[in-house]
Image (tube, rainbow, N blue to C red; front, side):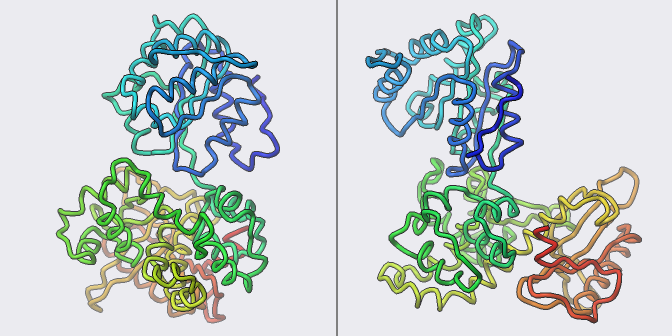
Length: 478
């Protein structure tokens, strides 16, 4: 069973599939409970359904309904094929029947947060059944709980909850990376792939269900594709960014959260910058930032050169696109004036959406670069700011590649990079990187082997010196 073949219809997800198969076929009697989480529409249910079909077992998809309705559907799903249903008075009865009906196989409960919300006693009941002396120990059922609310699923595994010590698998399904996403969309042109990814990211459902397989055929078709898909009120993608926020149970009044996201999308990456942009005190936005971070809608990253200085970025490209482009054009879009709205927003799209997104892709490329690219494997990749007191300015480093920290030794900088989506990089950009390198050396960093790198979506001027690494779109997608 350990060599269960992944079905051909499941795209990618080799690592996730291997982890799930290892859990489902483990010979250990201690492997009984697994958790699968991640944002909605990433293909978790699709993946688990495929696994369930391959190894056999039980699959129940929870819904937003009352406890009574959920128990009734559970009993109907669990009943043998041919009609009828089990009638359960409570979840204890339901679990007893589940573990006796599936004594050897896999049981999957999808969208588990729906159940735990209306039945708070369910998690401790599951733990009771799976305890060493619990009722379920007589069989070898392996139970997978899946959920699309990252905040809730994270709390299920918190150290003060019933299931904390019971899980043998905690799998987080993430968006497809940018290279896999290009293959999934069938995009061979790297420039077009960046433009599409800057809107839809790596969410598989956006291609299959949300735009019904509508793919831009070329870079020239991109503007028309945007107009007929994400900016089209008749497509599900049009309102999806709003739903991503509304589905989080910890978010009640969405206004402050949209304001925070809008500030980040406009280029305000620090807590103080976000607060100033929306006219609030820094202390007022602590809770919204925490909720958005727990929901995996934003991420906090430390400045490469300033410990304690955090930079926030939005994790979901569609939200960046919505906040930077769609919200300000909402009236035109609702009235069907799509072409006018896009014409008025395209420059903003390139500067506030594609530009920062390209920088993030360059950092991702650098983080997973082979050893020979920077002399060794990176320890951390981040953006950072270098103060230049003599010139009374600051130098923004888009791609700072740092080595693994070694106690007692200065932090080694493997590479400093400038990334520009729509500008041809020149020797002037290299001079800025040299200046940053010299300033960091004075601050105590080890820059003896630092590689200077230029990343561009528009190309490179011939005056860039030898020895400077050039990373264009072809290299980014190689």
